[in-house]
Image 1 (cartoon, rainbow, N blue to C red):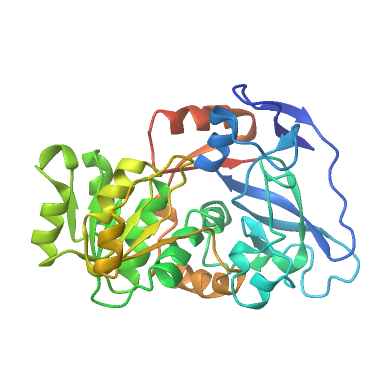
Image 2: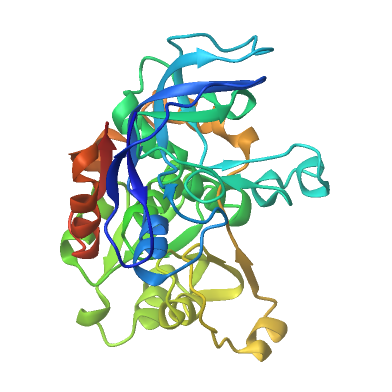
Length: 340
């Protein structure tokens, strides 16, 4: 099969012929219809964030496709099934898995990190970690459910604990932030979107944001949020991974409110500990999505409550995967997919 291979940081991916995987017991081989292009991959390529499996490695962790082969003991998947693969695979038996925290499984494996991913014509996966996509969801656009939609879903539903009528502010209107906007809207929140690009704020409005703020056009974002909400947001989401915007999002939260950190950074963040204590603030992290939540999320997409077609702005052939990352570096488009 053909695959785009990650050789080393600060180098483009290389198109190579790799052995087509064969399924073992409990495994399936999926013919990839599409794989979303994610900033996580860019961290490996541009910033030297190490992968658990040393290169050469096939990146890509937002995959959907058709079952091409099934291994022994696989009873609930068959050739031709329309499949979504979650970004993170879980063991199902560690303490975190057994207490409903599968997304932080102690033995988790991630496509394009621990094992070969889906910037390829085929990908090998455990059958238990696959989900049927109904015909109502197109395979190509539906691939982004695996991470770009599921990560915001977990952040909103489980970590933000959003309820109807909550005032929510979202810092960053990239792929993750825009989907936090639309998922929080689907849960009944009143959403304020924050970004320095007006074009992205327009997209946020189309996905349900009731208010938008460009930090370059107001004196202080926190003052504006407090004015719009009558005292501050119930929940703030930071979807950039920048110490300044994490602190800024925290500053927008009302007394007793919650900050949910979804963006990744390896830098230290300064927050006022006295405010956290005296005003009973909550600061929580959010990673990935629990497998148990995927069926509900897939239903919401199939029912039109959460959009995917509108989020995929560009498609790239497998050989042009590096161009997709160039576009991401330039901050262009909403979400790109690689279509082998």
